[in-house]
Image 1 (cartoon, rainbow, N blue to C red):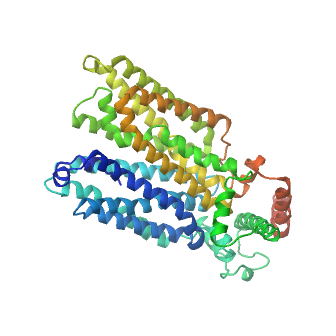
Image 2: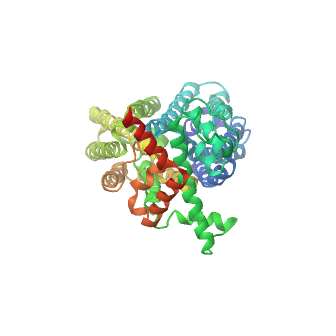
Image 3: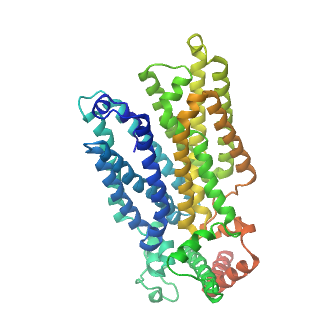
Length: 499
């Protein structure tokens, strides 16, 4: 939904000369729509499944994109941006949620990092499409960049029709037989001979892969633990229904048990935005001009290079995010981003009044921007989408991911609103503010963030030991015994020793 290039195209400006306020509103309506979409998508994801909610969000996005592409007045564009924002926000919450729930723990980080790669690829493609079409005659110069975004929406919607449903969501809905079949398809194992009801499954487990049985039992254990907690609330008179139950679910995110996880989801998105990445993407030409590089073509080429560097930087993150872990990448990335921002700020302070005679210093500053972008692309860029999708338990995952994504869009909105003001007031101060945020992010990732690599979603409680009471752990052990998980693991261990 990139609009920056469109707003400066000649045909667009002739048709609709817009004020700075209208420019701000055009940026803001998408982000506010995305905030609403992210918060509301969790309810749909739990009720109608992750997969069908993604398809619905795609249709909303396609409708919004169509309004923009075929706009005949400014209100059409505003309406299209608002509708498209709803779809973008919902998808930014639903996609990582679905991917986390279908991924094996040893690949979850890499697969979720692919989402960041896709986001950056879209940014790069959108920017350079606008760069190529900017000199075309007539409205094609701006309708083409706005129209090409319909394509990915159609592909994603059609693709979801053939993807298997989330096995964890199926377990949550009590459809264990379907969950086992879905899990077998996702793990590329032979499909068990079961019907939609779990009771129809062979009692001795004939034809069912042992690893599949263990993974499904882990999901059932977590779901049963949730059910028993809910029953305890109902017995104690705390259970609500309807809207009150939904509000209570959101309120539980800030209870003692889940508070640490909630703040990790909210703050990873806060630091992702306040690292300054979207300030570069939204206002790249302005920032580049602030460090002494003039000319529309030069500034556009330099700011377009930011997206390319970020795309290349995500590639090693995909390969190493599960091998090295989340914490090392976050610490390295935040340290490098801090250094890059401070270096740029220093160069601006020293040479901002005489860039003409210090062209090399200006290009060194551009190198600092690229260094920052590479560090971001290999750390907070992909991991910002990984952590919120894996730290919450099944019962709170939709609300937790929705709140984390809402943090992303609300801070995104603030960045878009404040960056032009900050750059006008003081370019050097702008980079110092971002450097400060990156340094705090380094301290946070060093002393607060737990390591979640190669931990299954059902085992995440052990990572957040301080958030789980002894009574819950005892109940979980009993549930594992009742459902036969412990007996199955012990049998497999004895078989491995005997062989």
